[in-house]
Amino acid sequence: MGGMAESTGSMPESMPDWEKRFRAPRVGLPDWAEDAPDRSLFVSNATGTYELYAWDRTTGVQRQATDRPNGTTGGVLSPDGEWIWWFSDTDGDEFGIWRRQPFSGWDSRRPEGEEDEPATPLAPSYPAGLALGRDGTAVVGRSTDEDGSTLHVVEPDGASREIYRHRESAGVGDLSYDGELIAIEHTEHGDAMHSAIRVVRRDGTTVAELDDTKGGAVELGLSVMGFAPVAGDTRLLVGHQRRGRWEPVIWDPLTGEETALAIELPGDVGVDWYPDGSALLVEHGYQARSELWRYDLGSGELTAVETPAGTISGASARPDGTVEYLWSSAAHPPQVRSTSGRIVLEPPAEGAAGAVVAESGTGRADAAFWLRAPESVPVTDAWVEGPGGRVHALVQRPEGEGPFPTVFDIHGGPTWHDSDAFAAGPAAWVDHGFAVVRVNYRGSTGYGREWTDALKHRIGLIELEDIAAVREWAVASGLADPRRLVLAGGSWGGYLTLLGLGTQPEAWAVGLAAVPVADYVTAYHDEMEALKALDRTLFGGTPEEVPERFEASSPLTYVDQVRAPVYISAGVNDPRCPIRQIENYVTRLERRGAPHEVYRYDAGHGSLVVEERIKQLRLEIEFAQRHLSRLS
View 1 (cartoon, one colour):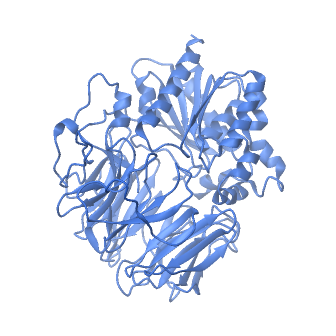
View 2 (cartoon, one colour):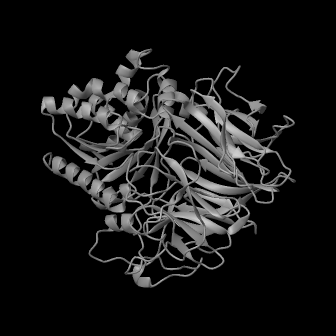
View 3 (cartoon, one colour):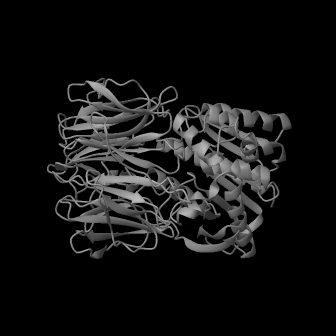
């Protein structure tokens, strides 16, 4: 459900700014029911844990819909707005079932002890997409180690039937307006980075196939962007990479007709329908910033939707023609804005007894409960020549004269990118006197297909070449103190941190790795099935088929070369970077007597609890400061 917007107000003066940024209540871009647009669902951390909230725009009432110790963020509204579906896992392990609850029926929180009903009869699994029909039908995607990918149609009476099964990754793309056509993204060809699309009927019979992975000299992928939101219209928006970047085409699976769109913008282009089907809302991402456009399907006219400079983390066109969007920049906290000129949504306020206070779309509760995140410093751009082309980095500088102790904060993914968006973590390091450099290495999205696809068969090592080039620039430019360089990141960024500490041991003074891949062979055998498929694509096979590639790219291979103190944090329920392979790496550090600390927490691939996030960053900052102080 996208990023999160901050509320306005004040916090205690004694609280440091970096903690205020985490604790400030946030809201995500509200998702609204297609046939009941005044009923919305959004994510907020108002209670200190990220949970789902229902919002009735006609009355202004907001209520907390979920309340679990480790939080909830996966939720969908039925088209009629009558039901909230949400995914129920166990302490962040991502393995569970869909539950549902009525949108209305109580004024604040769910009655204590009342549990939402299972929404389907299907057994627990990893989720692989969900689409809800107007007649109460659901199309549910599942992934398990035993079955691979399966898709099921669940009828309004609860009866279910399997309509798709394959060992490779697949998921629900979308359901047509009348509920008769189902778009499936699949990777039956074995390339988990480049999907094909199959459209089937409700009984699973194939209507049409669109596959750009076949017969070409390069690997191309497709993505489902959505069926037309109009009765009788079977057109499907499809994202393609035929010209070296993501852009849309309209495809009618019943006729096979493809309609090209004259959207000549330099970066990646994502689109969504306006509710009447007459136009497309275009999200254009380019060089770590994004913007919105309106594309008229009748005239072909492309018109800018005015938004501030920065990053759009999600956008939605409303039935009245206005556009709601979640905007931020590195310097400015996020807000849910509208092209009507107003702030759309403020976070729910918590009263003394913990009850959710009703809000209007533009009003506020008691100002004593409103908190605002302090601003941070803007980013500047650095373009550095690397071995595979120009590398884009985003830089934030603290006050004073350099060179500064510098954190290379490496993003996860790997198919992701850092952008000019508000982030509490980098801002905290700046507050503590560190420069922060974020590198959009090869493998990152937003710089064309070739840049994203450059990783294969030398994963980790390729990204670190780009990071090394930016590191050399940062030192030569006078920004970074070469004796006080910190390599840090989470998930894939944590993996690159451990790999970088072992393959570039003289370059880094401290390493901070959150939920990392540490022992790639063990990680492969323990991780969720969808990630196994991705790893087979990245490496070109399994650990048994290409052992030399796994060995070359595994941090465990180089653990004895690590010289910098290492801090590792790990979720004990993490299905993406499982705990056993991290313990294998830590055992090797212990045998050498290498300086390290490990923090294990009872959640999955990261935490949805604000205090836990603050604790983890505080531990990282203290670890870095303690070890860097010995170099002064």
